[in-house]
Length: 309
Image (cartoon, rainbow, N blue to C red; front, side, top):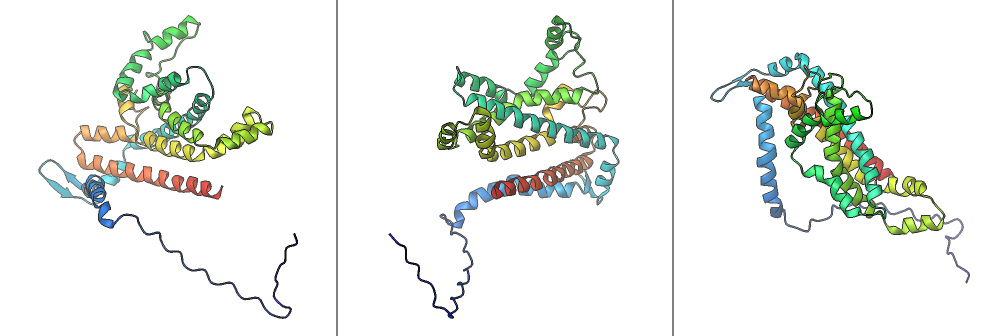
C-alpha cells in the first residue's frame, strides 16, 4: 500500500516548532509531613553530631571545659609525622581492597550463577565470613599468620617454602591485613553482583547463544556492561569501608610494626588514647572531608558514565 506524505506547498514556509514547555517536577505521592519522622531521625543521628563535631574540632575540650582555639588543632594534626604515613596507607588499603573485591566478587558471581553442583551451598560458604565478627576474624588470623607456629607458614613449610612474617615484617603487614579484609568482605560484593547478573533479561543470553557467542563473548558483551550498576555499588561501598577502616587493622597489628600499618583512623584513635580530644576530633573532620572529596566525585563520574551508556 502506497504511503501518502502531505508536504507544505511550494513557497510557503513551514510552521516553526512549538517551544518546549518547562518540565514540571513530578508531584510526590505522599504528603510532605510523611517524610518528617525520617527527617527527624536523620537530623538527630547525623546532622546534629556532625555540626557538633565540626565545632569541637575548633576547641581544646575536656569533660567539663572547653576553649575555642580556631584552626590550631588542624595545624597541629598536619604536623604529625604519622599522618602522612596514615594517609598513604589509607589510600593503599582502600584502593587495594576495593579493586580485589570488584574482581573476585564478579568472578565468584559469574561462577555462582552458572549451573554448577552445590551452588546454594557454595553461595553460603562465600557469604559466611561477612557474618563473622571483625575482631574475631582479626584475632584468628593473628594466630594463623604467626611466623613460627602459624598454620599458614607450617603449610608452606610442607612444600619447602619459608613463610614470611606476615604481620611482623613492616613491608608486608598492611598488605596482609588487606588480604584478610578482602577474604571477609568479598562475600558481600559477590551477593551484589549476583543480584545484578540475575536481573539481566535472559533474552540477551538466548540471542547470543543463537548467534553462536561463546562464554567469553557473553561475559564481555552482556554481563560486564549490564552489571555496571553493581560494579559502581561495590566500588563505592568497598572504597568507603577501606578508607575509614580501623577495627581489623587495630585487632591484627595496632598500626605496627612501628607505624608501618597505621591508617588515619588508627592515628586518630591513638590521639584519643593520649587525651588530645580536640586534636582527635579535628582528625575525624579531616577523615570525613577526605572520604567525601574522594568518593563524591567518583560516584558522580561513575553514574554519569552509566547514563551516557
